[in-house]
Amino acid sequence: MKKISTLFTLILAGSTIFGQVLMSENFENYPLGSFGKQGGWQRKGGNPDQIKIVTLPNTVYGKSLQFDRSTQDEIGLHKILPWSQRNPGNNILRVDFKIYSGTGFGETGIQVFADGSAHYKVAELVYFASSGSFIFRTQNMESHGTITLCNIDENTWYSCTLFYNSNSGESHLMIEGVTFGPFSDAAGKSPDRFQFISSPFDGLHTLSFDNLSVSAIKQISASSENGISQTTVFPIPASDFFMVKTDKKISQALLLDQGGNIAAISKSGQINVSGLIPGIYILNIKYTDGKHETIKVIKK
Image (cartoon, rainbow, N blue to C red):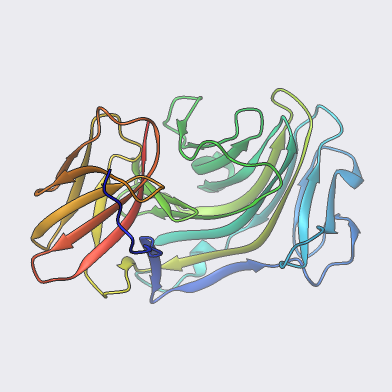
């Protein structure tokens, strides 16, 4: 098969426009050891030493927040979001964080709730260690949620970004540059609580978080090395077709496997992937103005 030698390093990325930070934590200012009610955080369940500040070996992130699951009860750590204090028009919630997959068989992740005591689940992104996959859920989704990124390696850092648009009710995800969504839920919600959550599910495990940032922004823009306009590829993951939505005219769309081999070619915004094996692919979209854009996609 023909290979493309060009190294595509660009990933569709959401950039914050006219935003404000509501919460930021890198955990560097906390002492090592058990993490109690520090920095405005409130905890629920578990033993004192099951949530702690650690320094992982061979890491460039310094201190991180670790959930060390040695019992079968659910553990939570939450903090109030000052959503009501955001600037006018900043109606999109953006959550950035890094998660260290660790080892074991439990379920750990982040949750965003809205509407005070109603605890409406705007978004939940959890890592299932037993299946090595990230699952996304909202209040109105079925309990099993939607599988996003699979084949997660143990003891590895993953960068995650979550967007919730309170105007439309839509959510988008980005995990290691791979985009997912949109996911539809109720509009008009007011995210006012962020929570780390860890439940036993099917076993015990150890997992860490770092570099948390929660922002309220006005809009999301796609960025690329060529400065082109926003392009959306859906659904991700896809079984039969990827659809490309863009305001530019497509010249050619090349789908490459991770070895650089051409897996599919299209002259339109529809790419047939029904005959391809599941996995991560690189979609290189060339436009008639000579520019191009590269997006990671998943075939299921």
